[in-house]
Length: 269
Figure 1 (cartoon, rainbow, N blue to C red):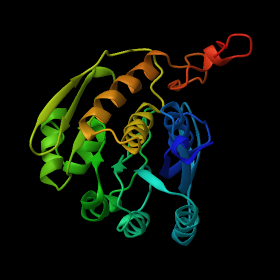
Figure 2: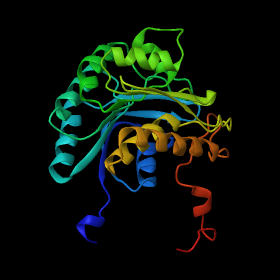
Figure 3: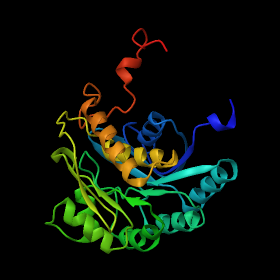
């Protein structure tokens, strides 16, 4: 295959979801759906399924660094996503590693899962704001995460996006899940991103997919606003087409159209 036909390489830094619907596993699928190859750096492991996070195990910071060094030594990284990272020590190490990597960085501050589990600690808030926000292309919290970051328990997504810009984020997308009202802000403009509110019960991994899709589209060279709009539509479709027969809790999204790819049903190319 000629070099110019190779898919762009994205790096996702985050946590494994043993249930396969979100986290690193969800990122790999979402990035593949927009034609990207994915390298990974694990910050942690979870014992998790669609009903929630049952146990978690952070990866030692030295091993996180070793993974990053191995990936960077061999791959031309075009964009980075940072997801669930657990601690201030992890966040500070990641910021140091990314400081001279001049590519788009999408920061998804995963603190609350679709199944309702709390994933982040308060000790990580200051490190995220002080160390990672200056390196970010865009921050992509949901409303609950935006409220944790800002300390604002009452405002809606539009106001929360502006508050996060005030904290130093260059651009923000605040997602509101089933409400169908997301907001994009970049300090110059604010845009409400209306989308269908699909109430399928298949939202597990929706936030991970959304931020990973932005990452992949940025790796292809799309401007940020266009990447956000396209990723919002694709993530909404993944909820609409979610795998409602899988899992007993919040079912996983489907970014790949898996039922159509089953043996005997795939369309010939």
